[in-house]
Length: 347
Image (cartoon, rainbow, N blue to C red):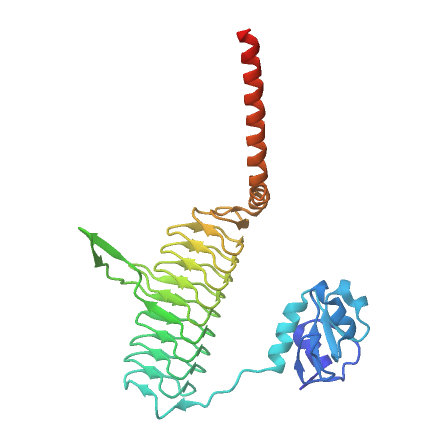
């Protein structure tokens, strides 16, 4: 429970209304009660804004006149909502210590403030810094290094040669450090290539549930500071993802691809291997990236191209049947003209 004045301060936004009003939670415009706060960013929900019972609404300056109640006005309403929601819904505080049903090797180094849940395992020589939470059934292999205030969710697996910075979050069932997909062909039979690199995460990296990050063949697979990965993503060996890049679900990135800083990759995108992707590249959903992208911008399609070209090509493709019919008609008419001219010449 926090006052509107406190929430405005936390979000860095301007309060217009009763700052003493107490807020107990967050909700959508449609479902909010008089004890909750909501946000408005999409004009499709203007009717919900008009009828909401929320105690206050977060909105942009150019939308303030659309709502007469208590307002928190921000140039980035969704960011303000995120900060307010976090303040009203703090993360659970895990019990410090090692659960009796956990298995921790005697040579592992755990800060006294670490929490290790039941059935979790920590291997020989692993290092876990202060404030970390290791969830139920998580597996921390030998020699793994985990920086301060990380959270490893249930059944996540961190294999050998994995190193995490501070404040990383690893989702349930994620696997970091698995062997990269490397095989040499010997007269039709596949011979595995040893994967000798590791996995390195910078500070404030999030890895979603059931996402896999393979270790490199010779060099590390690297997720730089602030990278955000959704669920069910495949990061192959030797991939480098630049700072503050966000990647949505079901993306597959083949080996040795380097993705720049501040990129966004929508769901279901595929990358072939050994590509270079520039900073500030944004790739729309279900695209297939088959060659390097060396210029910032928005890209789409199969194979990917600039979003503007993709839109034009898609519009033309939808008229392909109509164009084909017109060509057939024109060819028929042209044949008739040629036949008529041939008959005249024969006479």
